[in-house]
Length: 528
Image (cartoon, rainbow, N blue to C red; front, side, top):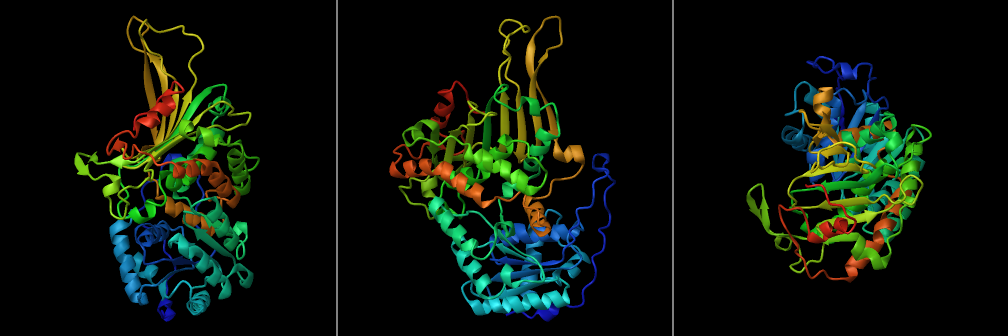
């Protein structure tokens, strides 16, 4: 067990120095500093996510003067560390993975005093009681006032045991009468509809819905947050955002990486479970939702849920007409040869798992009836890129353009990663005596436009959970509805062995069946 006495002798945070000149586009923006003191307890603190993402996020929040004056960071894991050893490991993670570079003094010296560690088993109530005593001591020494944010960065199989131990040890919200208690749960929230419901039954025994923050890091990306602003803060877009003017919408989440060291997990999941059911469907709800009555998080999540409930159910007999799946073969990425999926570590040599998934969905409501939403995600594709492309309808009557000129549809593209920005394609006359028409683009880049780099998603999401803002977190009813939408596909795919696997080369555009999916509607995918 750790010695919490090392958390004494702390200094108050000082304002960061050497700030750049203020950008006029950011003038008048209020401080984002968090006010509530609290402890953040990271379960699975010796894992890769903690080292690469979570602890660097906490450090950068402190570096940006966004954390409250009084806070504590407590790691909990099976690995055996003293406080000093754990702090040394966390400094290594900052030095290697922080967007702000290696840990800086004197900031790090003050920050590390607020870091402590508990070594224990996730199903041992005695270890959790020691954690409770540790947190109570932090309340006295660090001034954290009984506010607690639990973060489950463990394998999903440990979610239920941890939640059960939180309750048994007196760490649950019902036993905390002096402050607030919240919990962040990493994806996947279940592996299918039944397992998601089983997990939810365990969660709701201890936490009410307003205390649960189901995290989807895609929703913390700056361009994703800007979807609502683009729609509802600009009169030029919202009047066109409906079936009268929109032809179709494509949402893409493409990766160049393979399964890396996640073969064991991925071979029981696949692209539909790992990406479409959560990340990509969440993007779709933001694109398709109605304007919320209020700007508070429940009103926004209400509208997102309505989109999912309006999804047209996929008929089991149409699964292979309205979806496509693929599995990557050997190929090359950036000129380097890479192995096929079935040659990856911990993957079955005859695996039927999809590493590419595409689906056509319809939303049966007044705004979107008859507008197809094409969703796709895949590994080992030609380029890493996530985007939302809104393709508007063709002009109703051609007046301009020389014979042979192609007048392309207008397209609005919201670029999520690795580029972050917005692009609008429209038609313009080519300079000269004749009326030649060509497509041109107007582009906006977040980093160039605002003069700052967008922080990683985890910084925004952890800060929001500490603040109590659940806007970018997924509510249970939406999780359940998303699983319900994809289950007919998953069940049908599981019943049928795809004899064409592997059916696309690494470094390509994906399987031919995906191209046929859009070709059947007279459309084509945007190039990856």
